[in-house]
Image 1 (cartoon, one colour):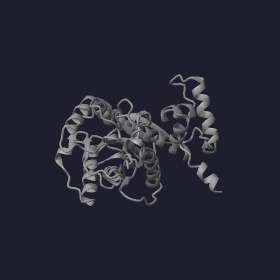
Image 2: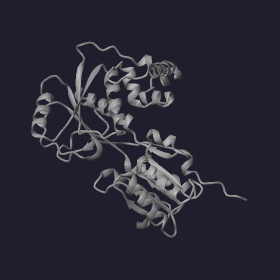
Image 3: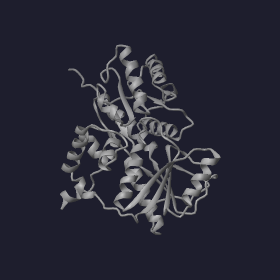
Image 4: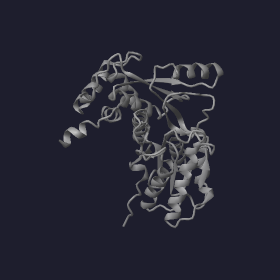
Length: 344
């Protein structure tokens, strides 16, 4: 009985991790998409792993009369981890015998008008409006007449519309608390630009963890980057020049952590013997770095599924947990943050 229950929880991300491929590759294979040419060996490997993990038991036959949900997103950047939320939403919709249509929202007047007409065409039972980055959404230009849920965003003008958000303050707290438990006290943070909700929430969690452990936050240890590799490198050098030098650095993304790694190694220092590093996002590169990068995994898979389930609850006039639901991620611990054993 328990074995069957666990098999039913297999997701594309689980298959991707075991097969050693990206989640988007798994999605292409399992949805039998020919939009991108994949090597036959890759397709066979994904199908074999999916079969071994029991994924075939989750397949739902969909007929031509399937109800449709529309997901509108404001755009994605290359290698954006938010693609996991979209893939998860598509999978959840399929399992509920619904078809999820994804549209990219541009701010041009013509695009807004066309999108509004599409949403209100009568062909959809609900809309998920998504943002690739956590932020307040300005939806005054869009008017829809069907139930809605916001994914990775919120709108003060629509307080009754459910929104699904990452618990980034908790994420910042968990990362910092992990480093403190390792015995580090001089902990710095490389954060993204401060106009972003995610940056401020992660800093807030970082500060709270320090305070809760009787460590006074040092503003010199907070360095703001523009999310670029080059700036992460330069800001890491600035941190390394401080006295006392940080014992550990919390990077607000794995990409920032990559620049941080380069700067530390360029100074002849070693990770984690001389300085520990933790990333955020848990992208595939985290496991590929040497040493492996400890990273906080954003809960995008869970958020995409919750968005679809919440929308279906709204459509069916069922109660849902909260109008603003924050979802916690998980810290994946690797060697980069583990304090070296004291020599006797």
